[in-house]
Image 1 (cartoon, rainbow, N blue to C red):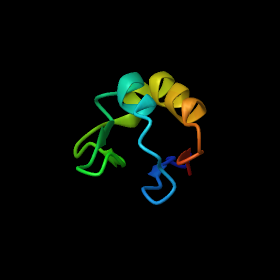
Image 2: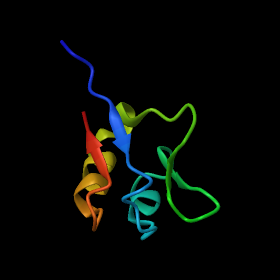
Image 3: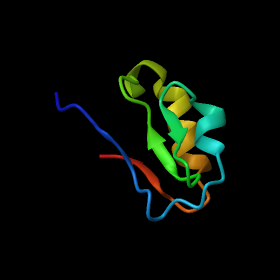
Image 4: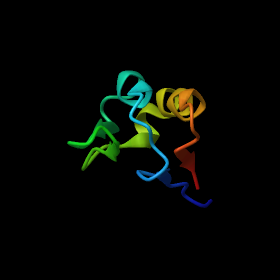
Length: 65
C-alpha cells in the first residue's frame, strides 16, 4: 500500500485561508498569507478535513499525491 503525500503549492495560493479554517492542525499561512504545512502535522489523522480543504481551495493549490 502506497502512502499518499499532501502537496501545497505556495505559488498558486491566493491566501483565502479556507484550508487553515478546515484543517488547522495541518495548514497554516506564512507571513505573506500563503499556505504552509504545519511541521509535524498529520494529514492522515484528519483526512476528511484535509479532503474538504483540498476541495475548498479556490485555485487548486492543494492536492494529495
